[in-house]
Amino acid sequence: QVQLVESGGGLVQAGGSLRLSCAASRRSVSSYGMGWFRQAPGKERAIVASINRSGTGTYYSDSVKGRFTISRDNAKNTIYLQMSSLEPEDTAVYYCAATTYYGVRYASRDYSYWGQGTQVTVSS
Image 1 (tube, one colour):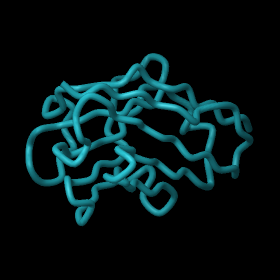
Image 2 (cartoon, rainbow, N blue to C red):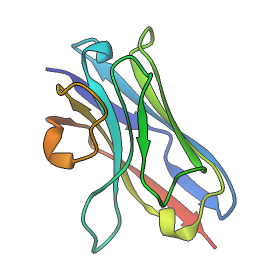
Image 3 (tube, rainbow, N blue to C red):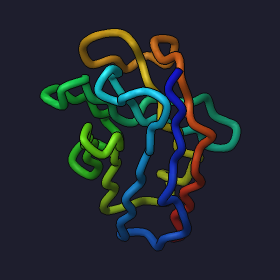
């Protein structure tokens, strides 16, 4: 089973940028579609972005489209989420997840493997 560890979270001012990383181990990340989800206090976990195995297909939620970019480096076994123009509404715990389904998946129920999460806090 693949293990996922997120990093790169922190405190940033509104308008700033952060890059999250998700390092995979035990299995090659190229065997999985990958996604970033987030959960804010009192809210359900929601998709942020996802990417297929080859990196040729992506999905973004409407709330982050044009501001966030998901990418993958299969050679480094790592997934990234570049976040720009951050807003206080982006404050949440961000989770990396892996799915064995093909294609670009955006439903959390399709993902079997999850990291422990990394906190992103955007101050106004």
